[in-house]
Image 1 (cartoon, rainbow, N blue to C red):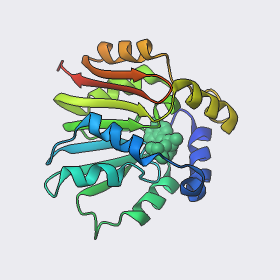
Image 2 (image 1 turned 60 degrees about the vertical axis):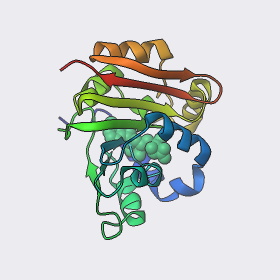
Image 3 (image 1 turned 90 degrees about the vertical axis):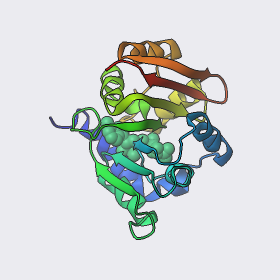
Length: 205
Ligand SMILES: C[S@@+](CC[C@H](N)C(=O)[O-])C[C@H]1O[C@@H](n2cnc3c(N)ncnc32)[C@H](O)[C@@H]1O
């Protein structure tokens, strides 16, 4: 199946080269998000919508040499920037995958799947949650996280350009209902001025 919204993908392709200059992340907040996920050494983690790979350094060192990360994105240019920063010679336990998580076949049996700053862009959010939950082993964790409030994120998208102007974070109860419907149980949620975070565990086969 082709990507449901090619214009949105083109938008990210066009922004890739300047992304790291334009988009700043509060390292302490990202660190806290990763703390909440609590990845163990040896885990396999899927980083969904990796972009230029902002999460990679925060996650990879926690996984140790025996763990691994798959960084997935549907934007070729974003992946090219990320791969330039994290080459295989230095990061042998990191792989990149070009895929649309809504339509393409995805690898599975991950210990954790993290969607950092990407969830609003999924055209069909219940489908995304269902598909990503299937990438987890039983007991594995799915996290949706933003280091700003829902209101801030939705406002940023309305301003950013028409390709992403309707890309909204749902009210938290709606996201939690999607997670439950996908066979997950809630571990943690936070929806305030600082963060939008939902962490759930896959409990149903
Ligand atoms: C707002 S950027 C965030 C990138 C990175 N996580 C960060 O925080 O800097 C969203 C990223 O998700 C990717 N993306 C959006 N929808 C996607 C989908 N359906 N499948 C794969 N990647 C997607 C975009 O190409 C883009 O790189």
